[in-house]
Structure formats: structure tokens, C-alpha cells
Length: 186
Image 1 (cartoon, helix red, strand yellow):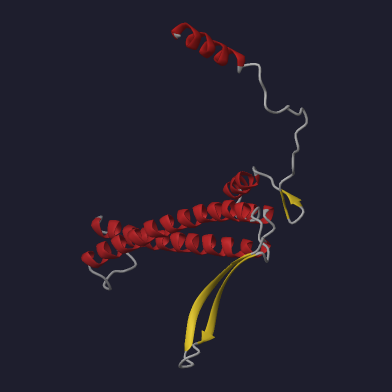
Image 2: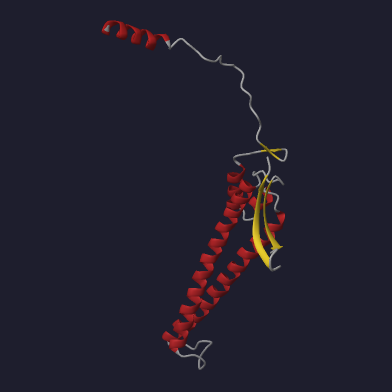
């Protein structure tokens, strides 16, 4: 009895290898990914970020968001203006303090004490360093904006999926209620 079971088990295990339930088709059906008729380019976000890293605003132009370019240049330009202004004032007060230490007359003679000149140097140096950090942060934000915008252009956004806030009256006391509606249509 044991031999019959082991022979049946062996036949069962080896016999299933050649049995197929379905026939494989050689041709595959491939559908193109599209968003509103445009093909999806998976490298577009990387290209937009790279272009913005080379020249600020170029990634926004690549994404066809031309209205963002003046904002990018305005933000980076303003922070660089404050960096240069604070750097010039820092050097002005530092040079005046160095001249005073050397025993020469400076442009602030009689107006400021030595402690005031040292305090002004520290203030303008701190503001200069902060302006540089803000400039670098805005430059990085420019790159991130181009990358994220290129990603979001590839999402399918249509009326079948909506998220809309709504204000509606309460039927009992007629006060205004605030709600959110999420609709998904197949």
C-alpha cells in the first residue's frame, strides 16, 4: 500500500510539469500612457530640475510656466541685493574700525564709539550671512519647484475626480455649515 501511494505521488508530481491550463499568446497589448493626449515623459522632472540648476528659471520655461520666471529672478535678485548691501556696510564699518585701531581718522570720527563700530560689524555680518542662506534656499526652491511642477503636469486631472469645499444651509436652523465633497466617477 505504501508503494502504491509513493508511486502515485511521484506520477502526480512529474505529470503536472507538462500540463498547461492556458495557451500563451506571443503578442502583448501595450497601451500608451497619456495625459490629455500628450505622452508621459518619465525624465521630464529630472530635465526640468537640471535646467533650473544650470540657469534659474530655465526649468520653469521648460515646463511652460513662463509667469514663474520673474518671480524666481525677483526672489533671488532681492536676496542677492541684500547680501551685497550688507557686505558693503560690513566692510565699511570694519575698515573704519581698523583705521581707528591704526590711529588714523575714519569717516565716523566723533559719531560712533569703538563699541558701536564693533556692534555694527556684527549686525551687518549676521545679516549678510543670513541673506546668503536665503539666496541659497531660494535657488534650491527654484529647482524643487521645476521638478514638482514637471511631475504634476503628468497627472490626469479631469472632472471625474473632484475635491470641492462647499457651504450649505442646515435644514433645521438654517445656519451655514461647511463641508467638503469628494466625488469619484467611473
